[in-house]
View 1 (cartoon, helix red, strand yellow):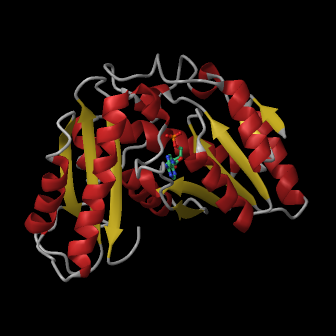
View 2 (cartoon, helix red, strand yellow):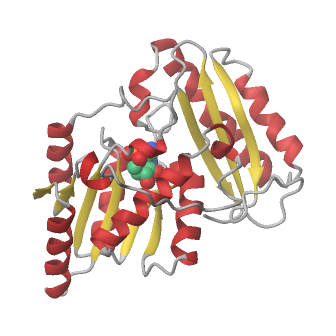
Length: 285
Ligand code: AMP
């Protein structure tokens, strides 16, 4: 597996892949790899001939009070995991090569970035859309694989790629969970033992909603109440939002007619860790 730092070297390698007739799949990550990330690699290997994983903690998607400095960066063990999972290359650019001092260009996806996580993380999706478009331009992948875990990110990247005519297919991989049901996340290492136990109720809440939906309940208020009830037993888990939204516009729904995204963000009271989770009912992202 190649480890590449420079964007021009990455571009040259991907050109070689394509010249050899190999399709390229891109898996963008910020590292601190877990089974969730590796499932994206597996999906890429199933649909593409060569897989490139980017590992880059993107400074412009973090707010001033967020965890950019302390975000885990176990680079050597990440490379071992990426290689064992079957990546052909890891692209880990230096911050200064991605954002030189005279850097001035950003991608603004309107409307769908102001809701859900965008409401409490201003500028986050501008940073995400910008770095992902840069990776698309460096790697020129036929397919890019994203996790449903970050559902709003999927919707934003699909919108951006369609709006800006980027010739890439966006594939979405299901959420990988711990045995307890907690969605795997690089930020789970921040949780206290008690928070870890209580945060497993987040998924239990989503399952309660899914069960009600299967029984025919379509009123958003009633579905949301079911999550609130389950989370009542988790005093260390404080909801930032529980929303039921349209899967394309991310606008809130009163009643579900077609597909709906049930999206949750929670703040842990002790460690202040922020966790997100979701399910899609009646369709997919
Ligand atoms: P991150 O390193 O957190 O930026 O995540 C990189 C990619 O991995 C994103 O597309 C995430 O949605 C995806 N991802 C993170 N956690 C999971 C998970 N538990 N299951 C599936 N995909 C995930």
